[in-house]
Every structure is written in structure tokens, then in C-alpha cells.
Length: 224
Image (cartoon, rainbow, N blue to C red; front, side):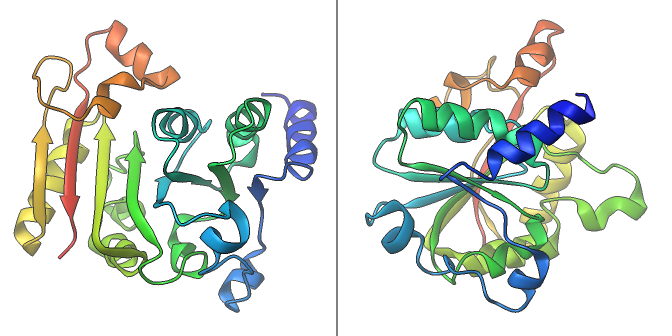
């Protein structure tokens, strides 16, 4: 994507009613106006809030919003030029249950109050295979602790990935720490039993993986 196109998307994001771009200072000082008030002040309902972390183009957030009109979806990503597409689609389709936040995922507890979230989706994250990159792995113990803070008592996390490494690493960590794995599948298109939203929604990159017969894995778990 050219810098001209990126700038155009950044400028357009600033006009979108479903996009929020708080500064790091605002978040660190606990000054984000929607923290604890997403339902009352933005969605204007009491429906469950579901997050997609590292949402990319926002494909999953928008598709989930279409599948579950009785839930609210928020995509988080630091790259606003990517989720521009999802935000624009949601607005064009008059989807009042989909929003996007441009932020770093480690600041999640500055965006949501304790117990404010019902579900978290992590779709095709960078597995950060090199050892020195483990602190950026979205299912490491530090991130799980942050997710636990914002999730309500029945909250669940979904991990969908094409990385066997990420699948195995996460399962090992969950079992080792005593978290509750509700469901795990190492090839969702070959083995039946996954929730419909796991196979009914396919991202742009996922379709490319499937064309070369790459297995797509899925885990649903609760953080204890």
C-alpha cells in the first residue's frame, strides 16, 4: 500500500463514527472516555462485548457482527490503515454493533473496565517463533492476565491460527497453568465439531492458506 493511500485511509478513519484512536498518553493516564461505558455510551444497549485482537482488515469483526446481531464487536489493531476496510464496510452496511480501536493490545486494560468483555477472538496472530519475541506472543502468560482482567466471570478466549507452533505453545501453556480448555481442534476443516463461526468465516489470508491445504487450528478456553 502506497503512503498516499495510507494517508487517505488515516484521514478517512478520523471521520468514521465507529473508529476510536486514543493517544497512548490518554490511555496510560486512564483518561479514555469509553472505558467501562462502551455499552451505555457507544452501543446504547446491554449486549455482550466481544473483542478481536490484532484484527487486521477487520474481516472477522464485521462477519461476526453479521452472524450475531445481538452482540457488540470491537476490533483492536495498531495499524489503522488496515482496519479502515472493516470500519468502512460496517458503516456502509449500517452495522451499529461493530467498532474499531487503533491501539496496542498491551493497553487493553486502559480501554476496558474489569468484567466489561464477554469474549476475545485472536485470529491468525504472528506466532513470534523466535525466543526473544515471546513477550509479543498474544497468548503468553502476561497477555492472558490482562485478558482475565477485562473478561467477565464466564468470559472465553478463541484462538484461530494457521500456526501449529502457536497452537501447541498455547495448549501447553494453558494446561500447565491450569486454565480450562473447552475445545481444541488441530484441523477445523477436516475434523467436525468446531463452532459455526470458526468455519463459516474465512479471512483473505485464511483462504490463501486453504488453497495450499494448510491446516487451520482452533482453541476455545477460559482463563482461571
